[in-house]
Amino acid sequence: MESDRVRISRNKPLEVSNLLYTCWFGLVWGAIEAVRYLPDSECISFGYFMVYLVHILGLYLCLTAMLAGLSALISTLLGRSFRSVFCYRVLLLVGSLCCSIGLVWAYDQPSVFSIPGILVCILVFVGCYNRSVTQVVLLGVVLPVLVIMLLAAPRLKQPICTDSGVQTSGLSDSVTQTNCILISVDTLRADYLGCYGHEQARTPVMDRLSRGGQLYTQVQSPQALTGPAHASMISGRYPREHGCRSNGDPVKSPGMSLALFFTGLGYRTMALVSGYPLKKEFFDYQRHFQVYDDKFSPAWFPPDFVFRLPLVRFLADRGLVYDRRYLFECRGVLVNRRVERSLTDPVSPFFLFVHYYEPHGPYEPPAVFANYYYPHPEKRLQGESMSGITFPAYQRLKHIRDIGYPRAMYLGEVSYVDYLIGDMLRNRVPRFLLEHSLVVLTADHAESLGEHDYYFDHGRDCFQASLHVPLILRKPVGEHALLSEQLVCLTDIPDLICRALDQRPFQPGIERAEGDLTLLPGSDQDQPIPLEANSNLLRHSDSGKSLQLDHFAIGVRHGPYKLIEDLKHKRTTLYDLENDPSEKTDISASHPELVRGLMQWLAAWQSSDLERAAEIPGLSPDQISSLEQLGYIHE
Image (cartoon, rainbow, N blue to C red; front, side):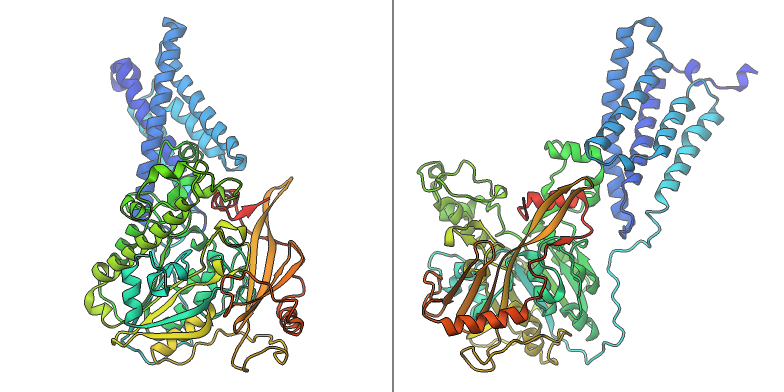
């Protein structure tokens, strides 16, 4: 009878038995952990899942190998009587459980650790010890597979897909063959482009676009934050109307959008984004695009939810594996590759939204662009011009002493993104498609580089340094350069695009509450532009961290005049931007009637509960941590 049973531990040397067991244990442990941390409601393609699984299995095999070496060392030190298969596996099991529980508790996720995982580890421990081949297969292979499938079932219940579904019932119109490419450059100042008058800026691509199209000189962003500004750009609604008032704050009233408008015309709509505030979990307009690509890492890199695993977060936080920057932004070279892949199968007409993140801090352009504007990098550690200046931590300027260095690096980032746009238009978009495309270039907001004592940041005031952005429209048919001094807002971009394509006017689908314009200068055609500056206030409670909307300032732009109400310092100022574009002289004392008229209009526009704090719902601790690292949260 003994010959009918194959005893694993007797027929194989101890080292071979332990090696096979260790590899198998690591694979089962890694697979269980990988499946447990799959997102519950995210649509996952099979390819991305396999990339994710291979990476996690590799990490857990490495961790198991380390625990195996430690277990073997301990069993050897304990003496000959402990140098056995049983002792080795007990030590390996104890080590793995301690690692799992310790990592889970370290990241405040005790509820995530699953009882099935513990049971499988115990059964794996028992499974191969002194058992027949049949028992090994049943306990060591079939059972783990069943448990893993049981754990994965709730997470893989969504259909395998890569595109966002779009409902387009009721939207139909004639199909035009003119494509549209909307390029948004994050944190781009208009006055740092050659075509807007900067004497040092090397931006030949954007300058060339302006020479073959229409350049708008007076373009206002309603808010200097990525999420709210892009929501306004896509929908034609102001932040108060679509509900996204800060990065991380969800869109509450999406309404119509450019993507839905073009879908109704028979266009294929695609968006390639590169900034964390535009991730799918924050940006509700992603549902309006047929393709919304927010993966910031290369194709070989696992999906972003790999960082949910406590082991990965532990190693990534210490710079041992992966790059957490892939969570926050996508490099422009990767964006261009994605553009090329999106257009490999020529589909026309199409609406393509491309977002570049390069000018956003930290300012770290490639050396060739950095050296052009700052040829002596050793001087950045000399001088005292940075003394006493407050700047956000994400800018990485702690040891910099020359204030000219970050300003030069910002200019280097602007030139670099200009190069990337040129590469995209010349090499990534097929020429026959580009020749039949409307190209629109703009920015969500600008950047304060020291104006009004606000250094290398944006979002907390309503001055032009953060809100004056470029806008260039180049039609497929070449035309002479046109210069428009008309005051426009990002909310006007959808309608400008539709008119450039000879389509019906864009309707944002909302009735605006208009204030009294009789006290305001200018014609009835001059519509005031409401402005706001908000941020996220971090709150601590027994239930954990939460975010609360914090209002810094509100304002209104009407013609050449801008009124700003500083809510923190309880101060109201008025500027004449035609004669004072840098907003250095407050003229509110000499224009009391104008101030009163703008204040009345602003009061009618603003919601009655502006001063009441509003909690931002639905954010996980990891999302709050990411927003905090990007400088979008204060305490």
